[in-house]
Image (cartoon, rainbow over all chains, first blue to last red; front, side):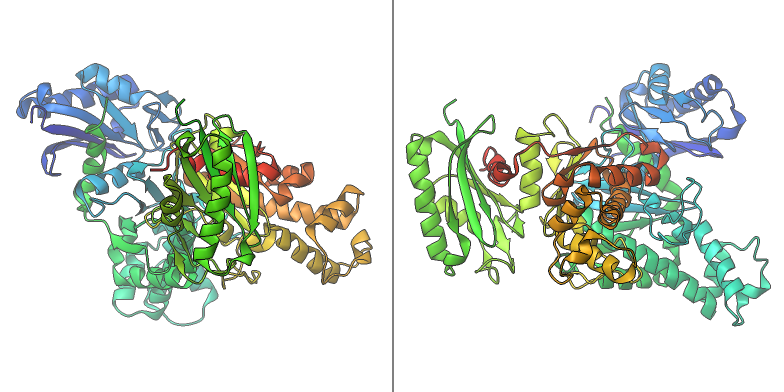
Length: 320
Length: 320
């Protein structure tokens, strides 16, 4: 193969990680810079490009690189821009990042949001190989999604489709979301949502729990997980409630696109059966009969440490 | 054009209507048979095929026909079969209707469910010409949907995607649905849902209303519409509640596929501003900010009498 590699860049609020990836999903080399250290976008792009060039040179130069894929919050595939991402230093502007990077490196680049990149990564290198219809759900500090229909990512008419973390799951007394509305899925089922549930349970319920040893103000989903693994009843119930809300939402997602699988990635998905069993239970109970038992619930097959770069890189194969 | 026409067949519980259609969406001739008169599927297919042949002969024979499109409840595009449609006489079986029809007439046939056919019809001849991302919502005795993403209908991995009438909109004390679950969108926003709301309002509310002159057991959405047109406050509130529930649901659909438009067809959509204004209001209020003001809410441009045959016929252009 003349151009056997792609570059993947994952842009987060703290770090920007990037690497050279081959067609089998092996990361040949990687590196990172601190996103926050570059409040000026021109400087950020210069430094990032230089560091990428250093890696590219080690694999034989840019003639070995098919393309560059970029995953970034609020990344728009159609425009190649990051459009108003509040967590990034230059996120108040509209940044045509794909063009800026490809101008610097003279390699075609494509950009999308991180959850879409995860979905394409899973299809290219992971659990969704060979699948044409699936939904990727990323359970991190927020809840993201990438939807694949007929083998193609769903971008919608504006490039921003697939915001399933912001589907409303509680219309009455729903939790306030960062988006300004109430009752969004991510207010219950993100890592921070689990911590909120823990605070609620500690206040409402009377029973004793390992969680009472912790400061409710700072309790984390990891602490809830550890308590649940020790058999703590309240902690287990927190995962059950979280899983049930996810499973109910998944039943609605299935009514929309009837995917072959829903694939979970990140944070909470590592809680294993604690979260998977209640999700499966609620999916089975709530799904429309015609879809019953048809949609698999599975975990991502990408290693957490590699997934962001792999997901982003997968876009590079088709960058133009 | 060598083969300038298609045949459209719409199969309903009472009637099967069919016609010859040209590329501009003109129905050149049409006919119908009573579905219920043919409890034997072989006889049904024979009679239907003969009657279609009679029309086809009048336009120059089967060499003028590009293909046959069929819209039917529970029609599966992938298999070409009607799979367990309780409202049809032979609906307890799995009927490979597309193959049966094309074997009889020696013309390629394709089949899908009626709401999907409506969506393809709208894209081929109606309000969605030139759109690549839209959602068609059919508001009849039930609520159906056809979803188009990137110019293609969303069939899902099993051929049954797009059951948006069965998304859960009320998780607590939801209305019992024909599907066996509770709180489905169609229990509130179908024609029968509107009648149910009227019965509820008449029982709960104290105020006088034109609706009190009707028998609550048999009240119809049409009667509610007529009362609303006369300015009846309760009837207007019934449409407001119905529209708000639709608009809230549409905000979630937008988070999924970010369509350029949501297109309404059938029954309730003819209530005009009475239903469109509250839908638009609730959509605007509930949609995630990134999608604000981007998705148009419009009415189907297909005439009700023609839409079923046109929608089905549009599948015929690509039948193989």
